[in-house]
Amino acid sequence: MNANFDRHCPDGVWEEYALGMLSDADCERPEEHLLICSTCQDFLAKVDEFIRVAKIALVSREHREELSLVTEFAE
Amino acid sequence: MAAPLPIQSAFTNHGDQNDQELKSSDTLPGIAERVESDETVNRDAPADLAGLVLRIGRGEESGMEEFYQLFARGVRFYLRRQLGLQDVDDKVHDIFLVVVHAIQRGDLREPERLMGFVRTVLRRQVAAYIDQRVRYRKDVMHSDVGLRVADQRLNPEQNTAFEQKVALMQETLQQLSERDREILTRFYLHEETQDKICREMCLTETQFRLAKSRAKARFGELGQRNLKPKLAPVFLRIAAG
Image (cartoon, rainbow over all chains, first blue to last red):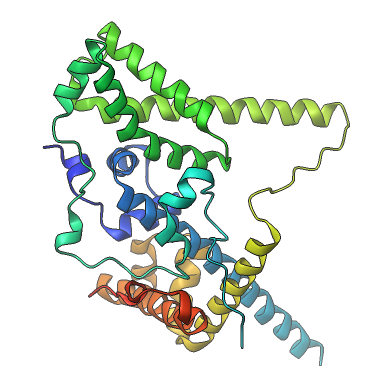
């Protein structure tokens, strides 16, 4: 038995991995697991997708808020 | 009413073989967290890694075939994700050969570390490729060709799907509380760590996780409403926390 690929990593780990928040050492277990686990590959693809969409939606929301502040100030 | 999203994912780089392999991922508008329990066990885990290494070391064809089947999907996934390339088959093959030769030379002293060894080879290949690409771009820029690097990952249909998903996310954000939105902004956009966010917003770990879960669940619900005919019930699986 090998702990690196017998058990899935927690969902939160994949989010941190996708966001590049894990150190090289912390990436070891998830990456080794990822190589052998199709379930986690699928899940990580979904996490990547969610993060990309969220980033764009959040950025555009921030820009809209900034714009409305500028407009208010100008008025 | 928004048009249904195409089945093809707008974000993932799975082409060819992986398009078929990753069908379930391609239809998802968001991510519902996985339910604990029976889903924590990796069903793809090899039963006898040491035996496999032994067979590869002896040059047994069946061992090499098994090894290739075991790793090809994962290696392909990793390379596509890291490099943003569709066609990585040559690189998968190169990595396979490097690892097989290393095993046959006796370089892999601990067979149970096979995964770690493959990962090391993979990371080196990725680093070398990126280095090569950076140097190429510098050369091209110096020669003043004015190269425009196109993002070839998304076709027009995928772009439409992408925009629809962003719109869904914007609707989701609109429906969340200001506090939940701040948590998502800090985590996903500014990439602040969970510890920092919890400390500065006086949140417990559970509150932090719940805020993210709520956003994912809402995103999934909105996606399902728009994608109703194409979605499977699995999309609404929401984690207990």
